[in-house]
Amino acid sequence: MNSKTRLSASLGLTAFASAGTSVLWNGLPFIAKQQYDFSEAKNLLLYLLIGVIYISAASSASKLTKAVERYCLPRTVLAFLLLIQTTVCMTPLVFTGEWTLWLAGGILGICSAWMWPIVESFLVAGRHGKEMRRAIGWWNIVWMISVAGTMFAMAPLMKSHASMVIVGLGALFCVAAMVLVTFPKQPADHDVEASSKEVPESYTQLLLGARILLPLSYIINGMLAPLLPYVLTNLAIEPFWQTPAVATWMVARVGMTGLMWKVEGWHNRWSVLWLAIIAMAVGFVCIFASGGLITLFAGLVIFGSGMGIAYYAALYYAMAVGRAEFDAAGTHEALIGAGYSVGPAAGLLAISFSHSDATANPTPMIVIVFSIIIAAGCALWLIWRKAR
Image (cartoon, rainbow, N blue to C red):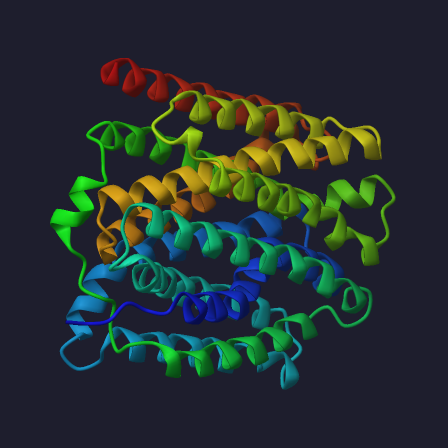
């Protein structure tokens, strides 16, 4: 029988590898704008590419892992993925063209989509009930703090050496690979009977509802992230302060996740999912309709809180109902990729309607996002009604 992965080992790897996730999904637009003078449309195209790659890789992650398992156990797969990312992140040391940004985004997208389902399975396999909730809580807190912290750490490099942020990631991926020596060769065996005792039947419908909100949250962020550098520039925020300012919503997400971890009263409650969709909608409008810093930061906090609820609920119900298998984690990551594909596409559509920059005329973008939110709300209502 395979032993459980030590929680400290999972958290250690996650802390270092999540820095790459932070830059991939939140930092690249700032690097692209500052160092390579990307337009809004070009940033959205970059994210559309990464999103399509991510969903393709995440949806096939389980099959790929099982296909190579005969020759290469999951721990070894993780090592390869981390070392590939380390190598790719070093390209800006040798080359200066913007193609290095596209290359890094594409390769990190593939590797991340394959890597995180394996990491999540190592984390949860062999854990049930309160022990599983504790592990997921710690894991979420660690990766979210790492993501937010990376945005602060980027600030000193943004004005003149933005591409060196990518090089720094290479070092962190290398350290993450070293942590693997403390991992078992593969995730622990998961006791299906013990898991089933801890999972109420209602969780299946709640998982469906959460899986409506998860891609929705990343659709919104997939449109938001590539455009935030331009929103902040329009508000006269200097490049040094832009990535720390964006980290506001990530810090809010940490706070909400910590609350959900410690307060178990939200389990099995539909009202929490409704709160998430409302918070994300209100936060998005505040960010893009903001005429000043107060409205901007209020929007970031509200949006981040909604993102935290959607992510934590989706992962918790997925790993509970899916019993910590690669398929459950892979589906979770594929839904994130779906959001990151649709979001940039919706942003490009908004630009075509506005006949100008999306941030200069945000009305088409707000209309498109609210149309998607209403559709998601209707789907959530149908699932909720069926579950009653």
